[in-house]
Amino acid sequence: MIELYTYPDFVAKYYDLIYEELRNPVDYNFYLKKIFETNGSILEIGVGTGRLFCDALGKRKDIYGIDLSPAMIERLKEKISSKDYFRVKVQDSRNFQLNKKFDLIVAPFRVFSHLITLDDQLSTLDRINYHLVEGGEFIFDVFNPDLSLLAKPMDLNLDTEIDLKEGGYLKRYVTAKPDQISQINWLKMKYVLTKNSVVQEETFEFPMRYYFRYELENLIALSKLKLKKVLGGFNNEPLDNNTKDFVLICEK
Image (cartoon, rainbow, N blue to C red; front, top):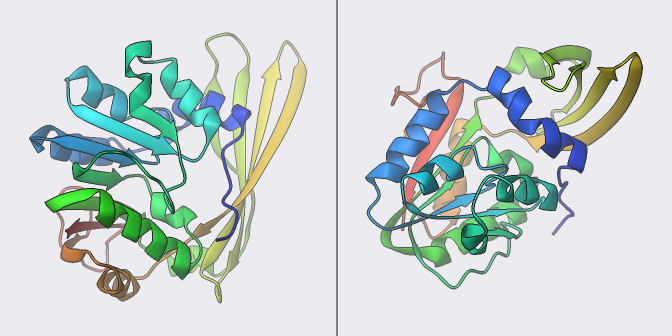
């Protein structure tokens, strides 16, 4: 297994603010609907700061979460009661071990894009299969690669600018260097915080793996899971040339 990248404290601190601006709520609605329809236990892989988890827990769903980044789990714990801390753990998706089986496991917001190698992907799918009850579902999403964006590097693109409630403002710049042979986009995110005329900068670099449609279908075929369907988006769209997100629904 190769070492995976974990989100540092400064990324976790501003994560909710940034993705409140950038992330379309359609995936949030899709996953919460699946969670609310589940009569049983749910596991969220890549639970992060609890975008889905906290609302599901607030509706008394029996939900649990794992994440590789301690900083993200600490942010999540700030939002929930200490009596529910047992529900969230710092664990690696490739070798996680929980003393529980689940009716639904989800890996939202492109968690699988952080799994770079085939061995890592299959190890994660094996652990998911082990933790599902018979007939349980696993749902995840990744983006459909835009070949025009992957054909050339992107340098210091300003993708977010936020006025902070405590004063000052935050800008995030993204640099991307595609590696087409490895199907990896190497990303560098530069955070620039300006407050009281003082400028602070932090950077975070990490790879994102991209997948093609039949590669995903073959990946599931190599695992012990069964592929039920591949959607072309979070509104149950069919696959077509306008598909931006692959949503895969699998079953044990």
